[in-house]
Amino acid sequence: MQEFIETKSEISIFETCFQTKLPLLLKGPTGCGKSHLVEYMAHKLKRPLVKVSCNEDTNSADLLGRFIIKNGDTVWQDGPIARALRSDAILYVDEIAEAREDVMVAIHPLTDFRREIYLDKTNEVLKASAQFMFVASFNPGYQSSLREMKPSTKQRFVALAMDYLSVEKEKEVLMKTSSIDESIAKKIAFLGKKIRESENFSLRETVSTRLLVHAAGLIQSGMNPRLACHIAIAEVLSDDRSIVEALKEFINLQI
Ligand SMILES: Nc1ncnc2c1ncn2[C@@H]1O[C@H](COP(=O)(O)OP(=O)(O)OP(=O)(O)O)[C@@H](O)[C@H]1O
Ligand SMILES: [Mg+2]
Image 1: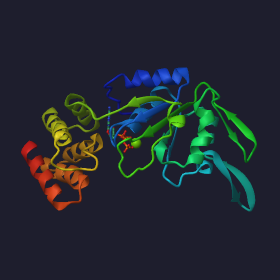
Image 2: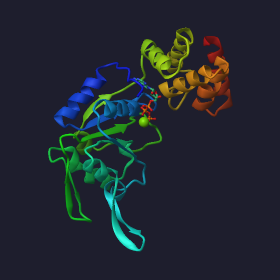
Image 3: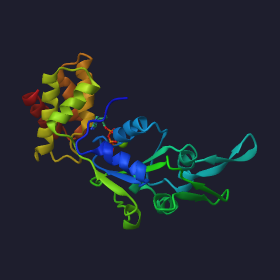
Image 4: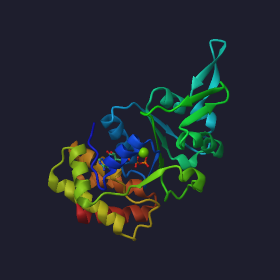
């Protein structure tokens, strides 16, 4: 398991929430390390991890479970929340704000002092053990999302704001995820910082650590570093040719 590089005690905050049975909300832009933190912590705390991603069609049956027809019989099939509760797992609900209102209502008793859910279809109450943890993620700047989390949902969580790393930390991530030299890792991390700081590219979302990791991986496999950054960063950040060309020129100056 690849290590998680801390910037503000994310590991101990996560551990304390686990011990105190508080649900944790990770807020931050795409590719800043939210999923990686959860995967790393599940490994560190030796808990199974159940992940589920929400979109605008996600309803409570998708998460709790439903009756299905199997070999001619009607059988109950647990959804990810029920599975996580039964296996004392860490449950990671990605993009929670996208889910429908009935999902929020269903998770409320799980995210407050009750720590349980009621499966009305099977008339069963599932109680969370001390080992169960609820973690959700939310990308507040995601512009295509019109949804906001309601205060009655949000105020059940402890919130940890995550952001892109400093050049030093991002360089460390690049060197840990690929075996590129320090000098090229530093250049890519610095390029990330420069693109983030620049207001010239009018990007919907700026360059994430994920894209820098992709570029480093291509370089490690022998690709020319400029080409790697063109295809892993410039072409991904925009589809507007003039912006892509401007990004490529900017990359050529840095790399
Ligand atoms: N602090 C960090 N330590 C180690 N690796 C990191 C860190 N932050 C980001 N990464 C790396 O960046 C990449 C993207 O991270 P991740 O998938 O966790 O992003 P995310 O926040 O979950 O994004 P999304 O909102 O799109 O799901 C991964 O390859 C991860 O290894
Ligand atoms: Mg993620």
